Image (tube, rainbow, N blue to C red; front, side, top):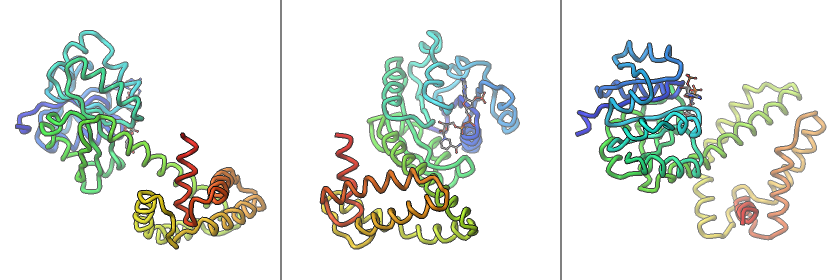
Length: 293
Ligand SMILES: NC(=O)c1ccc[n+]([C@@H]2O[C@H](COP(=O)([O-])OP(=O)(O)OC[C@H]3O[C@@H](n4cnc5c(N)ncnc54)[C@H](OP(=O)(O)O)[C@@H]3O)[C@@H](O)[C@H]2O)c1
């Protein structure tokens, strides 16, 4: 059935352009629209037709894929009674990064206008789109997922459908991005410490890269400990972590490096140790989670 689907792609930034190329390769008929029309040209050369407006893009296709910078931007693009009225019976797939509250609002709005709504999170960079390395988390209308599986399969070689709740993929994505951005900042802080001491940061990257190959196994232990609410494993002890971070913070201050990140983590580790939730670093889960209660 999906072989005969017509698709429109709205948003041709770095990610949207990669998505459009991947969809074209499946042989689906594709129309494209972008605010800055010059970004449509390379896709037109690959075989896409160019829609003259968002309304035109919606009216041309069975499936509308949206990937623009922000859910507020996407909402503005559809905020026209004629466009809203033309959504009935279409599948609408939104693939930008949105937090769960934004996704819930978008799902309510598109569903109220008769579209079957899917929300996806692309856990990869544009260069990986269409490859086995491209993880795509997707949630929302189950029938639309079945209908669009071949289109989604063209985008991500590793698709996980998380069920009918449209916010499910955004919950995982938002949590995963929290990890990614803080890890990236941790690397930059480590690089600053290395650099001010005159050490080569390419060597640092190599050492961290090799060391962190062990992290998936540690995450597995964390999941088991958090699930059991029992924090006993010998890997990454809380007391050693607090001692190390105290020393690292002092070294950072001496070296003239910004230590905000280290101090923040150290405060949480010390609070967790004082609360006595367990000897493993994973016990910090109890402290972090209770801050939200
Ligand atoms: N790039 C990545 O590595 C990556 C990875 C995973 C997820 N994502 C997500 O994908 C989404 C798009 O990212 P991107 O990398 O493609 O960003 P981008 O290259 O900056 O492109 C942004 C897109 O949004 C459009 N846009 C921005 N403001 C607009 C407005 N007011 N009205 C109409 N269109 C507007 C842009 O149109 P113009 O071309 O006219 O400016 C362009 O199509 C984001 O949610 C991002 O978080 C990106």
